[in-house]
Length: 205
Image 1 (tube, rainbow, N blue to C red):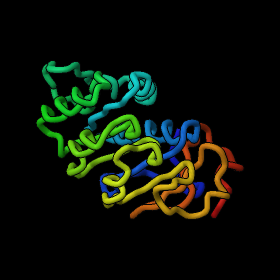
Image 2 (tube, helix red, strand yellow):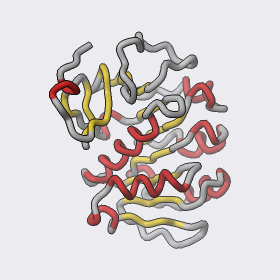
Image 3 (cartoon, one colour):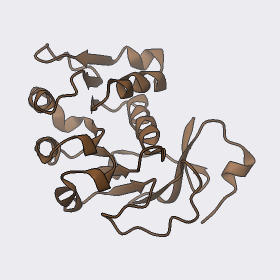
């Protein structure tokens, strides 16, 4: 499995943060975002993960090795935070997440993965908006705080379906599960490829 931009394997780094990832249900945006945060973890970054759905946390564990799983901790409300490389909040409740975020001592050192932004309010976004290493994922067109979101200066924006809230280039060349990336390091067609083949790698825009 790898992330490819314009047919070539690509790696995202702290330099590419903050990142906005958006797409409608079934577009591939959710899977891509999980692969991206798993790659950050795999390459040694500290992460903080929270989501509206427990299944996303299970899917993350499927993306990482046994060694990386040993560096993950699932934190229930009020439980001690050991400070492992991956802190994964068990609660999906917005108020709980806000309280737990405040308890993470090294918050600014972590890549914060805010999944399912369209299921939460601006209160949760405000709790993490000022952190330097933020990934926000969901459907921007269903997001309650899209106005606040549009004011943020994202270094990288990735769209798997054409958004109404942002002006993006033509989406007509996209195949299923492909997205458009616009950023400081990567620009063009992005996708996750499980087992690359010649046909997948030959396209250009």
